[in-house]
Length: 267
Image (cartoon, rainbow, N blue to C red):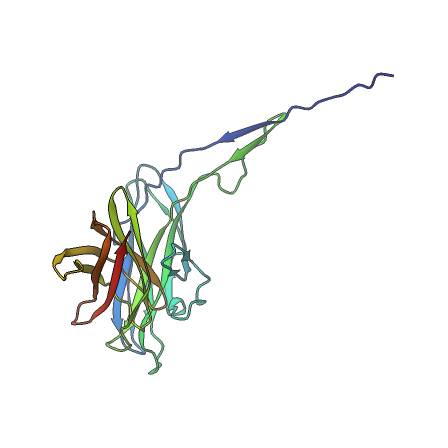
């Protein structure tokens, strides 16, 4: 007896709607304040709209980042130096009209604790809510519709530093040489092991094996919170095989400079 076989065709339809985030935070993405225990301060985050009306959600997270590229936006209050519980804000949702302007008011109430030292921070997220986010894409007959929505959010870092308290300390955690297209790059991981946030400008003074100066090479300027780390990549240009002496300087301003010496071998 011949058996009948039936096949069902399943059509999978992918669609990629273009989601443009016209929302901008015109007041900037950093709020940095020097405060005292028991002090209250505040301000506003200014939002500017684009071509169409947008629903905007405002919420808090903590924030940690690391030299290997990880960014952690944890639950408010979960990070060791979170100030999320010090901050209140209104509203937590708003409608931004086309080319309109809106404000999110925030207040920072620093605990009256004399043991507070150094820098504390968290993030206020500003996130557009795309139309139709709540409703899933409709399934088509004999097929499955799979939707992908891209949501861009803005992280406003709220940084509070307790007067001039807290230690300033950096650690040169790791280094390696990378050679690509005939150029040598010194990759340095730097960790903030102190209690205050720092913004080191990093540069490398290089000499050849005989001690002849080859120049100063800039590595840029990066913000580092306590417990966080960043990766600098310093382009040393083309170097012949051999050993070189490198003096690495991280200049944090306020007469606070950190340094390290390395012998680099180019093979």
